[in-house]
Length: 208
Image 1 (cartoon, one colour):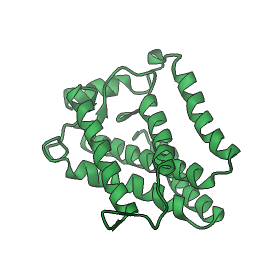
Image 2 (image 1 turned 60 degrees about the vertical axis):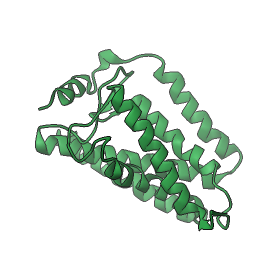
Image 3 (image 1 turned 180 degrees about the vertical axis):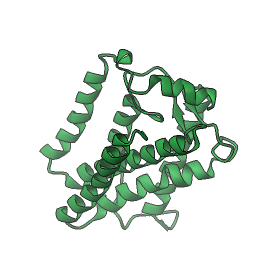
């Protein structure tokens, strides 16, 4: 086991780490979504949940990598936190991803708008993902987001971009652009349903 993994594991679901600022952060997330409900802006509401659900899925398989290898997760969260949910996910990261999809969806131009002659959705998926990877590299340099595998490093960020973020924004924009609310509910329900089943099954097995 790497030293980074050991540090993250010591934080994992340790209630003594709890800090009260998690509560107002939760209320910020609730307010963000409540605002979209008030406006009946279901495109943005469900787009935000889609991105958050995709992140939860990534965090689950990241924990499974650590369980399977016993060496390290693909990424680990080792900085100070109000609560560590999974080895690579603290409560602050969780709340951040809950808001990220809402912010990304609210900035979407009309689907027909082109950027440098290209359809805007693929361009914005690529750019948003690249910006997120840039933030992750800074967090890695700060020592609060750790990477212990040679193929997941700042020197070769392509996999971080491709696996870590492109699916997030793809799901976010796909759900946003669905023509019916029923379709959005079905898509988000499927994403969150898979997450819930995985958390229950793998959590009960002690793999998370």
